Length: 302
Ligand code: GLU
Image (cartoon, rainbow, N blue to C red; front, top):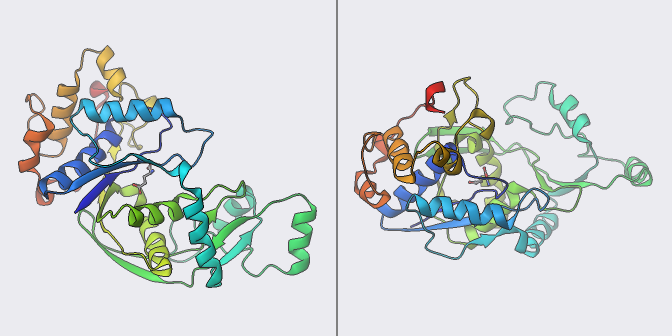
């Protein structure tokens, strides 16, 4: 059994990220498994080594240390390109010249059961002359998966039974950078990840990832999608909401031990005032006890 936490090193981890990390760590440790960290730094403009070091330090301050090497996606582009080549051989890749705006406009049309932001397939059957016109206009294509309406049922350890369709997800951006959904599937398999615990904003992307696993002949891990942490305004917690990182909280006199107790109490594992270590929470971990609803922070907690 091997779990993982896969942050993007684009800033400090906030309470929501740390809580998801804690769930994945507790699950791995309570199952006698390993826990790995992978840096999803595909976007080299926003990611940095300084953020990476800061994130690892924050995890360690709460008692979570990776059992395997910290892998960076930015160093693994060859593997992602090989996977795209495999899909290409299966006739599953097509070029897409759409701009973000074109996609946004086209995606507003109703498109049945496809996930949010699903691509409506504008470039699926592009004629040679339309392609030539795009190239002549200086546009470079992204690469998309040719999905065929495949549907998947995911028996999620947290969210329960989820069913959804795969769509024509981007495999490579038009700047040549491999896309998240492809990289995550390649890496989870390469790293022998058996359990993916992550935020439930990615639940609707899981059918896409399941299709990619099947096409690439990769095993599907078990999934647990953890409800997000919400700010008092009901939106997903973000840095702008206040004191949400370990550094912010330290300036208010809140120690990592106190943060851990707050996270543990939000998971039903201890009281918010307890002095506990992450190791002490391990034997208390139980999927059945975890709240199924988002953790909503009050204004006076930020
Ligand atoms: N890197 C993604 C994020 O920062 C998480 C991907 C995953 O866990 O599959 O939200």
